Amino acid sequence: MSQQITAKKQQELQLQYTNYKNNLQQLAQKIGDVEQETEEHKLVLETLDPLPLDRKCFRMVNGVLVERTVKDVIPALQTNSDGLKKVLDELLKQYKKQQDEMEKWKVSLIPSPNFLITAFITHSDVWESQEVLY
Image (cartoon, rainbow, N blue to C red; front, side):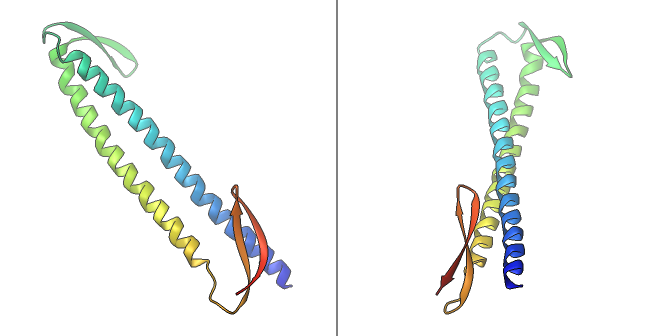
């Protein structure tokens, strides 16, 4: 019976671990996407900066290419860039919080001394059960 309980517990721990890893992976992907967009905005702003304000330029708005002037486009791009930086900061905070949560969870699994326990050791994101005497 204890073998079934430990097997069930092992599955629960594996599921929790997988959830933590997946959440961290998704946040990292979002962070990468926002960083890329931020860099693109920065590049466009640097390109437009030396140009005359009345020069014609084009901007994609909801999938439609519209004609504007540099004077009209720069403030909108700057606003978008500032918003992306705020989103990036928030995503980085979320990532750090999730990472800290996972570390606390891992530490909570460390057993108290002098007990025969089932330890779960991760190797390449695969949990293995081993009997350990502390």
